[in-house]
Length: 294
Image 1 (cartoon, rainbow, N blue to C red):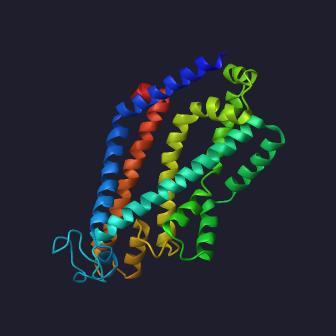
Image 2: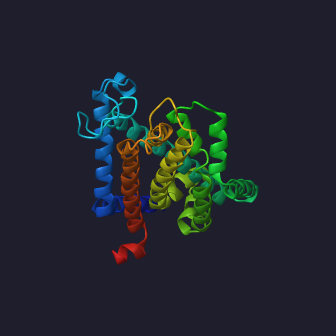
Image 3: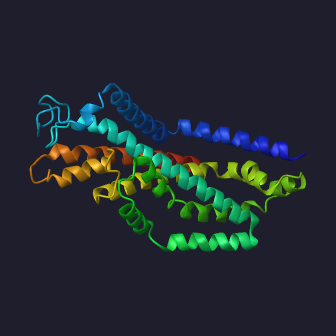
């Protein structure tokens, strides 16, 4: 009936958002550099013999430029080779955790806000409970109990505690959206509650969900790095946080092996900066006030 024109308008709006994102310099430049870094690490890692990542095949404590690109650590392992594994793993943690946290939070927020009643009361209490307790405390407790977890398991653990904030904000938006005319038309056309959520409401939250995804991505990489530096990270796999942990464990600072700990620190700073610029690009597209100022 009248739902088709509304859906067509939403599709056109989403195309306009994608076009605005592609025209945003912060989003395109930062996102492009981020992809180049990750793809370069993946390609280089695929071309390197996996045995070189663990074995001390190089002279120990070599500074950058003396036979190796970024130097070696106290065990004779190449820092550059370790980065080809650490960068994709850290990005994988952020990607999985942000996806789990954003999708789970969005689903709970949509269901809570749209259906209301007892469902909303139960989910609202659950959201408030998780928001009232610092997630880092739970992450440290779980990581200390479940030692030896892999990168994927660590990402899932972090993502399991990344949903309360998006859930609350999505719920607040849905409480307003569900009273609009297009939702009433969708109900009269015979659409079920979940169909209205997925087809009618979710497209209106696309821009915000994208910005929240990038923000959750940054928080997940930071959480993994913090846990790894505390010795609670994926010890059998290399991430940027684990590189810093091993550098500190072998007293790289006191031995003046600055390249050992500085390389992963710089890599983290660059990734954070690029993701922050991508987040700003999303904000400028989704926020009319920022778009006008730009």
